[in-house]
Length: 330
Length: 206
Image 1 (tube, rainbow over the protein chains, first blue to last red):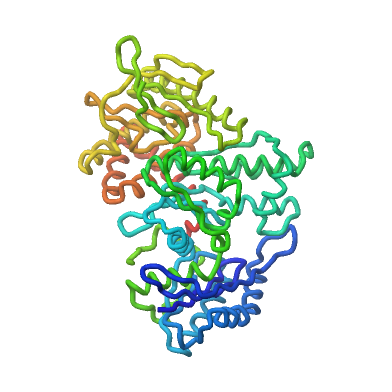
Image 2: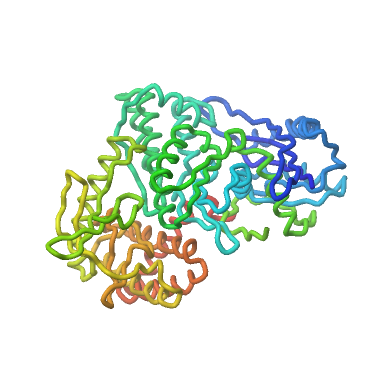
């Protein structure tokens, strides 16, 4: 079974082909092209969608070529049906629908964030982890029970990715800013006190964001100190929420997925925290931590094991789609 | 001294105090957290917890006695409460106990305080009473929004940690809460819970 996955929820347009390999899968190809907004600006949904339209043919062609696969060898096509930016989601859905209707291939709409989780599980060979999903779209602690991914903690306002992006943009950086902030933060070990808001297993970043911005605007501290203080505070909050969820759920594995999983400092904090509780910890490999076609293709394979394909008329997209509202049948 | 539990923010030891069993709760240094931040968190929470444990008793909420506080070691020595936490109860008893958690939560709110970490693991059934523990995130507050965060957290824990009995347990919690606060008070706060949820990610259908 070979599944083509199409991802287009935000800045990245990506296609991947995964071949079923026992219970797991082998990634035959994963090609991406990301929209880069101007410095100091965020993703403009219309501009990102235009980028995806222009990039789609090249990415799809490159992906099939890298996988040495013809479209005739594809057994199913999965696309990210949400959550994400409406105009961007529609591009992926249109490409998927066009291919499926012309070539008569079964089609599966999948949940983007569950794709992050399932690909992470497959690549790290984890069985029943507590999952920390940290990206631009999500900041959630999840564990699976009774056919659904259940939320054991989440952000009450902006996500960790948004916090880093918005703060980075105020410094004049271009999104995504996480990597750049981490690099700037390394220039200073100094820490300036910032609001720390952990509410049970939940976190709130809005106060931290405002305070960090004021810190820079005040001009009394350098960019490096501000970046370091922001990171240290935000990551400590995430670490504590994860630690609380770990103790509560008594899970023996912690899996970190999503774009911010690529952050080295966060990874090291979570690793040490997990060790304290005798818990195995792994992050999705950097290449597959952020948005990619593989997460969509792999979830397509899982869904095809348990569900019939969807009728073309029902291949919609949804900008807002809560992860914990999705029934998992595989 | 025996380590009972490695908690998320503290280690819990079983020890003795004047011939009786006692609990020593120590907030240890976390080497992976920034040192200044870690120190600030451990200090404020240790002090806060000791103060709030004493304070809630004034509201008629059962809580362990504080026997000693050593802020240089970030440690609280407190009375040992024998019993089982609500989280480990069978569904039938759990639903029942959630009603008591509801009325305790309401008593706190009515007196201008929040627990800050209302989970089923933070209530111990003992001697026919329900004791509240783990008050490190508790605080004094008059803001309805803070009360709403308590309710939201508890509902989140029920639907994730006790998925099968979540609805019955939540109804029972609300009954207990309303019995102390009254219908109008609950309606006001539950409206804020909805506001908070609408601020979350992907909460509203666009």
